[in-house]
Length: 95
Image 1 (cartoon, helix red, strand yellow):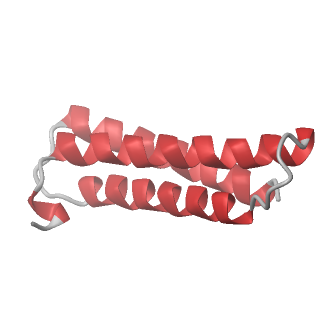
Image 2 (image 1 turned 90 degrees about the vertical axis):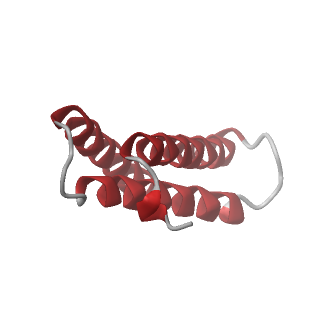
Image 3 (image 1 turned 60 degrees about the horizontal axis):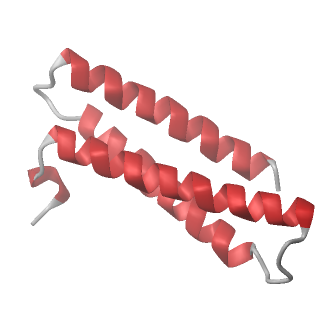
């Protein structure tokens, strides 16, 4: 089953889940680099966080590119794009 076959609400929900998981993973990596709780390398965790944020961002863009959207879904997708783009930019610049 393709991603485009799912409903808009399902795609936005998955976008949120991927995005929030990516933000949490990047935040854990960032906090560990400051407080040194673990002596493990945080690069792979940070990379997975970036990848999850990009997947969430691409799903939100996929929703907004659909033709017949209700205004409520369109506004939610726009907010999701802005939030995930700012989060991704923040974590990239905090390296």
